[in-house]
Image 1 (spheres, rainbow, N blue to C red):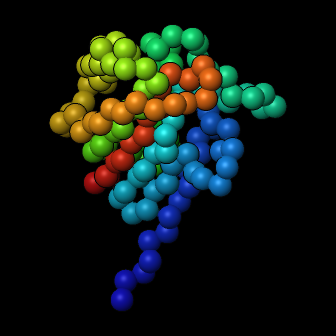
Image 2 (image 1 turned 135 degrees about the horizontal axis):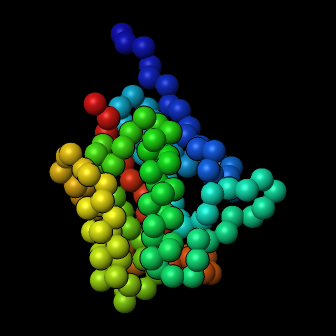
Image 3 (image 1 turned 60 degrees about the vertical axis):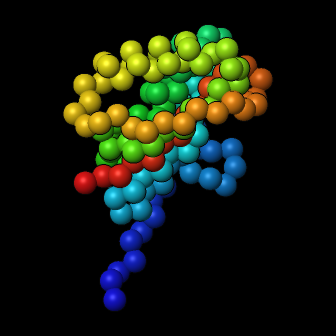
Length: 139
């Protein structure tokens, strides 16, 4: 019988405590799941989370930074990501998001094949335009 692998919650210093009973990220063994992240600026003690700005570009780039912070907290990188899900509030944002996405990942110097991706359209709290989650497999 093998020892049970611990499940570890991941909350980088850039993130506030989640508003409900969930983790920003969880790692168990070589699997790391990043919960849906939005474009909130890094946490400031005593202040409510604030979006990076009103534009899709500002929010998407901050969302990538937030996902990356959780990956790094768990010992992973973009090269370890197998699947990403992008949630948009407006179907008209798809082309712009793809341009931002392609430019961002071209700058990340990936050594492995890019992650698989699904894009869906959802409702998010007022002012938020995008949410992204990711599944990484390490090693």
